[in-house]
Amino acid sequence: MLYLAFSAFAATSMMIALDSMTGHSLDALPVICAVAGVGLLLVACVNLVLEARSSLRGNDREVRFFYELESLRNGARKSAAPLRPRALENTELASTEEKKGAHVE
Image (cartoon, rainbow, N blue to C red; front, side):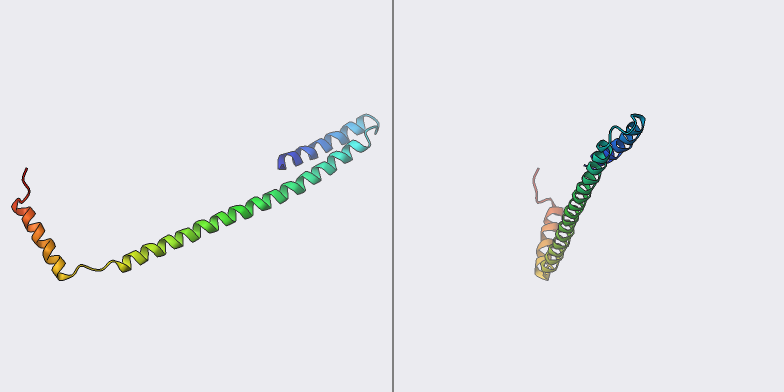
C-alpha cells in the first residue's frame, strides 16, 4: 500500500512534467494522481498503525507467558520437599549395594 502511494506521487510528478510539455492539455490528470497518492498514503498509515498494535499485543502475550512460566517454575521449586534423613539412609544403602556389585552382568 505504501509503495502504491509512493508510485502515485511519482506519477504526479511525471504528469506535471508531461502536462507542461503538452501545453497544459492534461489538466485533471496530475490532480487525480496526487489525490490518489494522498488517499493511498492515508490507508497505508492506518494499516501500519493496525499492524504495530497487533505486534504489540503479540509481544505482550509473550511477556505474560514468560512471567507465568517463571512463576510456575518457582512454585514447583518451592513445593519440592527436601529429602528426609530416613530417605537419605535408603539412598545410601542403595548406593553401597551398587558399589558391592549387586547387579549381575
